[in-house]
Image (cartoon, rainbow, N blue to C red; front, side, top):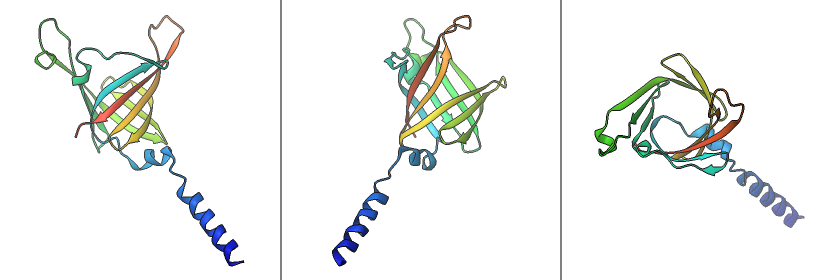
Length: 147
């Protein structure tokens, strides 16, 4: 009888410890900080980043604002020597992995953001490459924390 009790106790302990679901990460880890894009896939296929995209900085602030600093590619110059373009707006976590971002033109986009760890996340969204084209692509972008 004593052995059965120990077996049941150990089984219950193993079951409760084995529930390390990635959704738990999404509740604990915050998007607040500075990030850089490291990878993009379109419909599951690797899609190379633009020449200057790895230099872009995405900053998400605790007060719900964000900024994106992008560098333009230009012939015969280094990316960081080129003019930069900054986008600003607000962000909010809706629930689970759902986030909303509203830019300075008051346009809102929805994204799914899943954290792989405290230092990386994947942002997934659907988009059409052409407004007149009914084909919608699923785009996944991987970001790494830089601060």
